[in-house]
Image (cartoon, rainbow, N blue to C red; front, side, top):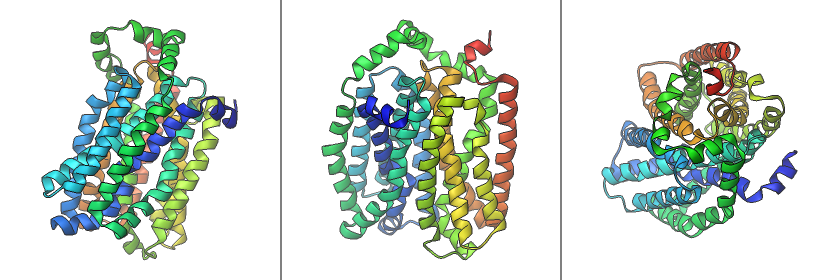
Length: 418
């Protein structure tokens, strides 16, 4: 089935996956970053001070993800989505009313948990659960929401702050989301009850989910996920990407200054990143569905290593575009790969739990990256040394993950254990 036919066959549900990633921008680093200068001035915070509250809120959100995120396996997706949207709306209004750093922390926590964490989690989990043969294409289409958001939301945030001030910008964002987001999401999920019933009736994992008891589900992660050696051979690579890319993007101004690039080099290169990520995701989604995920994993991460090496060996302005473009290429290919590999290994029945645990660790890694890299830069570490260390680490984890694929394969864990 080609992309056009696939979209026309599932317009609302694919639209749900797209829009959840699109509106997750209100909790993403690239959106909140446009408010950082105003927040520093308002609350008299240094660079490390605002970084402390941002990283701290992300860390707590990551810890909560492991518990809240798995509830998608237990509750109706419509109720779960309404809960997420409400959290994002409340987060906007808490930011508007914040008069102390305590409220600032709580507002950032709600935005990071609801936006970066749960909205992405709900989108990608639902695409993986309810699409079997077209998982790669489904996650690619949903990921277009993120690519589109990365192109426009930083500018929207900048314009709102410059026009209305940061408090009113968050206030208007909250009103917009309250009036538009939740009704849209619930409309896009029209008929989901029938879709879920088909999943329960037609798939073996759905039948197992319908027959399972709550106690069995609660013990699944300890019994299966954490006892699978493949999981521990994949996660070092899986955590490297959000850690390195988040840290490097957070410190983009410092990197720009050290490299001697124009001030607009990385912002413009970010558009290349988004465009390449979108195109590569669409192409690789169809290839993953056709040839299987094992042919692409973990070599899909090699372009990111090449992008980091651009930081090591080149200082010319054009290298900023190659660095971001190659990282976008690797990230784009990874979207359908990651959307397929986890349900293939652990099944669709518990995909919410798997993704919740993964998302928790990803968010913790993104929380630690800005502080850790900032400390390295304060200690005098060069951009080249940091990028070289990151590329060596990623190359090592690619080799580890590849050896796992060759030894164990990517089949269902229950088949592996027989």
